[in-house]
Length: 238
Image 1 (cartoon, rainbow, N blue to C red):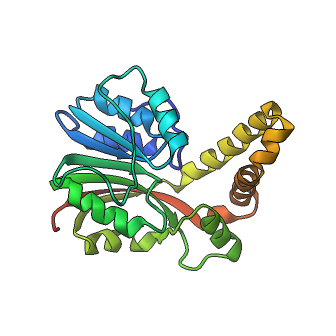
Image 2 (image 1 turned 90 degrees about the horizontal axis):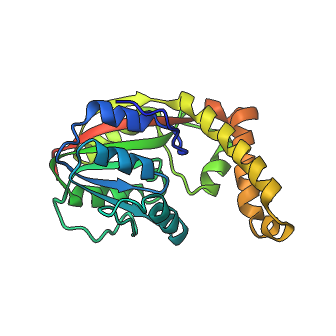
């Protein structure tokens, strides 16, 4: 079952479609990690999941998630640090996260996921990756500005294997990033027309960051160094 609705995260709806086609969600308890994943929550519920938890890291994301899922009584988004959650051990059959753990906290987040996922539980993760081991300084600046610490694409399987995961599949969906950054610029252009001068001043840093990163990817060659990969792995060694 594929969905045509576009998710505005790196990778678009490719990770969600992959999950719906390759993971049996019927009767499963699922943890969704990261803002912007509300549509995934809705479809997981529609496809038979019995319980779904959604966690985000900041208050603005929490408000947005609660608004998007307001009509679903069984879903109550929560704000938590991804590396220190409130969940018990062996709670989830499936953990799903899209472009939310590719930063400096990745090691601790993966350790926490291992604690709260069941034996033989399934991890579906979308990772921002480096397509080359060494990248130019302007690309490193993009990573730094977004608190990203991407793995080199050839190192992903070994990274997860060393941490007790049986990697089933890794799929390169780097081609979807062009759409993501193009949409960023379009949304920014529309927003700027609606913002007051005071609002533009208040959000100046964020506006400049979105503009700079999107143009760097689309027009300055960063697309040769930044990619997106989807990984499916099974928990088999704590």
